[in-house]
Image (cartoon, rainbow, N blue to C red):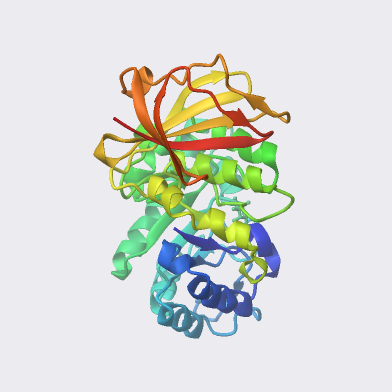
Length: 364
Ligand code: GLA
């Protein structure tokens, strides 16, 4: 769990934004809720010096001092690069400098690397024209090269793959060191984009587990025009997916209701449950979908979504308790309402707003 600069600040991020964010992660309680990684995304990179050593640019005058500051707050610092010659925003990538860059990050005190394919896609196509299998092999080798480079520094770093889910990365990513891997192209602060990404995670649960996670991309909670209900849908779905919770909002302007969504203790606990099992879709009928995630203690987190732009109720739609491992009834707790509902049966129904969710914890 943490925060990343891209979704809100994109190319404008500065050293000051990172320091302000670090301060706010502490003062808002987000750090103590679990958001400990502060990740600088693309556009920090400067030129290489005469020895080929990567420099940060004028927006980040002293990366080591920044890392010291972030660490002094009880937080960890993440950085970003690409296996290609250039990053996605056309800054300097790591191609040909992998060991040197990993060592520079280690010297600075970096704890997390997001490694974004970007221009390496062009390298792959140039080196193996019209041969997808050979291109994919080059991609795996490039990710393994940086994996080995990080290991060689001796400094532990979370290794985050960003190649948009190409070549079923969930099958091979963990074998070349991925702690998390993007399963999708970029998210945006738009309900339908978020929904499509979330729904696209169906079937991926078996590939995730402690230390190696599917990453449906960083949170847009609090960004753009997402309504409070939409933010709750986003947060609920990511929690069911055991997704890395990497906030992406501007903490200097965070509204109390957004802080409450990001820091809802029960939702965070669903995401971070010690069983480490990702959830999956149980049932869909048009815009109504039921997703469930196994939790410790024989419980299940169950989200009933209304993806429609109209309010609805779920009368006539079975809650599918048996498919979720319960008998004819289960005890239910409504997470967002913070309310026990007593025993429910398959005929349980709920009124949901447009783009709304009810998130339940079910027990025997
Ligand atoms: C890609 C990634 C994004 C972000 C940008 C930065 O699009 O998928 O998450 O890192 O690059 O340029």
